Image 1 (cartoon, helix red, strand yellow):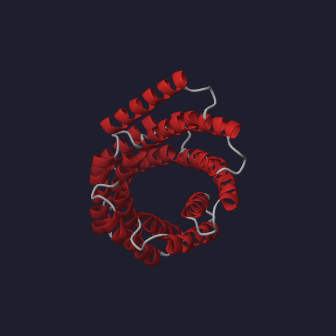
Image 2 (cartoon, rainbow, N blue to C red):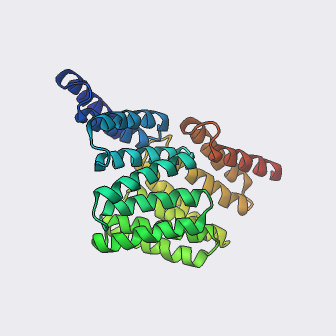
Image 3 (cartoon, rainbow, N blue to C red):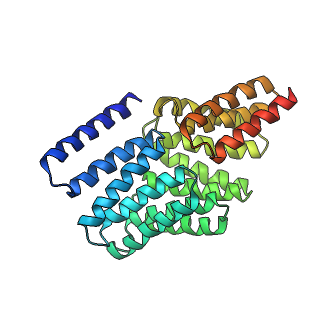
Amino acid sequence: MGEYSKALSSHERALEIRKIALPPNHSDFAQSYNNIGSVHDNMGEYSKALSSYERALDIDMKVLPPNHPDLASDYNNIGLVYYNMGENSKALSSYERSLEIKKIALPPNHPDLATSYNNIGLVYDNMGEYSKALSSYERSLEIRKIALPPNHPDLATSYNNIGLVYYNMGEYSKALSYYERSLEIRKIALPPNHPDLASSYQGIGVVYYNMGECSKALSSYERSLEIKKIALPPNHPDLAASYNNIGSVYNHMGEYSKALSYYEKAEEIFQKSLPTNHPHIALVKSNIEDVKKKM
């Protein structure tokens, strides 16, 4: 958490210096606002991130030609925040605008195109449009296999996301296979407490949980939570997701007081970090009601 605060104050200092030294719509301002937005996004402060990213886009639209790659990056950043806020249609619209620009500005197998297809897949997955999600993810993976070395973390992301679609379609053995492929690459490519490793363990845990293998699910979820506690600020929504998942395993195992304790931790963090109408808050409230009825 301290690192995020340091980064934020450093970027804000840079912005103040630029305000003194540069004309008002200089492109360096956009860079500052993007840097500030990125830190807020990583901290789970989505409305602040959105505000910074939109300021960056406003400046870039004034100073850059209409199909400049930096504009694609701006739309992508805005899409990411909307995605994190659960606003799928706005996220999709921003991601598609980003992709349109990239198709004009970049060569056909550029890794940034793969990023766009991947992000569009994430939104379709959230919307329950699994065949569209799978198609976007597979397009992303094709490009990444051409453009990137074999153990690049972005390949792991592609395998992870394809696993997620198969999970959502109820094809658990396929999901597990893709998740494990993703985890293998991440173990090679990333430092041991990287948040993406936590994401892999969480995905594997979810599949085991749905296959009824509670002890394997619990072990994966706990490994995920350990990493998140090191890697993320204390009120990050991804921590809440871990507490909710562990709560669900204990609920399933009939250990209701443990389940309630984890669900309540999840609710507390979600309420601090997400908009009040976010579906995650409704879900955890429903889980708390469910477990209280059983006690």
